[in-house]
Length: 343
Image: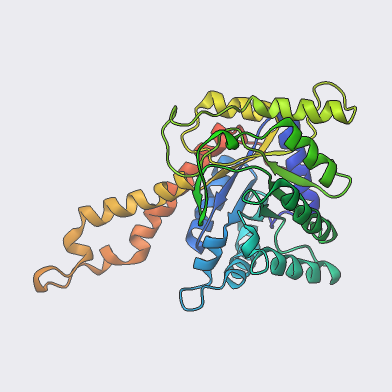
């Protein structure tokens, strides 16, 4: 199947919310990690989301120039071609973009999609993320309004992060403290500024104790039940029926989450969960194993010539792809998206 059209992406998200599952959103940094993600989704018979962060895009742009837009566009165009060989729908997304990188990343990418849509084509990416969590909420939402208007015109969904996720991702750092919990007032102000779909569809990365990076269960106090409070507060404010879920939530910083925490998040409106740390490790682990087991083959030790078949990147690259794709399959199972692909 091809990359999801705007209509298919909206249907994917609607179905996830209605059926209480979420799509893994897998960060990729190369054509090989892209194939690993696509393979994992295909093996799980799950549609999914592939995303590129600012750091990932810079890496994809090559170390000579390190240009984010070039890297993101190049991989997206590649994905549009190779995804047709996988029997699932894939949405392309750009991850965390803070204020100082908007002009070098999201805004130029929006322009690319605007031109494509004007020419009668679909957007290059299906969604973009604006990470204004380091700004005041007023400034954050003001910028979000501008981006949402442009995204809507380009048939793109915007993701907004209104309060901090702890830890560090691509140079954006937040302390682990009480600010990691979004309040009902924060949610109401968001709805007042961005609407509830009438001004364009957006995904909401609310904070309920989330932390980027590596941590063990119990080291961070997650409160996914908070998402229910946010939905209820906004529903009451806008006269929505009891039990309605106005927001499409995104789960950031989920490494180490317990099955119970993930289940609670799904029941309370999470439709997308970012996965990066765990898939990075899954990709690298078999490479390290291969290198350590075949030390004298991958290196020319003591004047020897090594073993070309051992240091051929395809040899260890296949191991890395298989391991990462297996982790994507696991993510689909944890998020209950296995077997839910749209036909």
